[in-house]
Length: 361
Image (cartoon, rainbow, N blue to C red):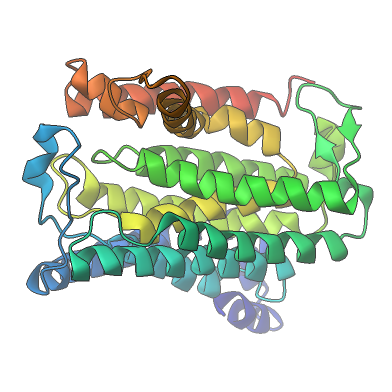
């Protein structure tokens, strides 16, 4: 909305043309989302506390987590509100990719909100049944995948790009692209949700990865930079940098309240939505393999759960003391802050490695 206003002003006052630059609007989006969250955050936390919308803690989890019971949850609604408002303010709303990522993020946010609501109202730590949650995730992810596949205009929009190589791109076809997109969105959404078990553990890696994706989106949507770096040029993908900027700002502001000891938890409404947002942006800029690298912490957390369940069902033994993996390290004696900061450090390294793929080809 602000972009359209400034474009109108620029017809008579040329200085307002500066707002047409994606880089400026990305930075402004990050600052705007940060400001919105800082302004609304304390009020929302007070409301959540007043309405007793507190976290239910699993009785089979680490005993140190019992003190977290009652901490306000569903704080992810604050993140979504900041992202949506900021994106509507600074993004080019005629860009179809903006609406794709917004609707996907909000769709997964609704699923998470229902899950959190059941946890809060019915005091059931498990929330929405896994089958129901997975079904609606699948519906949204499949619909988005089909839309992107059917509206693709050039091969680069559906080919799988292999990092570190300039000329290697794997043609997926419509079916292969739909399947890959489905797994990226649903997989990333659930991986972020599984990681969100300690104060600040999930939100900071999300901020780092979204910042890196802003770079990927910008260069992918810039024909000169894309050619220079040897990556596919995806028309109009650059505008997603603004969305990523909003996600970065909103995430940083939420970390202010979510840092140990957390004043509020994001809940599934935030974790599922943010994971889906990372997934859909990655698909559009064609960097699925790079997401696996940068989101290594999310990947390992999800794999730890799958391996734990498979091992227990097949041989009756557990591989880890507890899954997801962060609980395993807690039970080994690591303090919560140690687990969180060490996982952040790993993510920084992985994000830098992911960004290096832009040049190392």
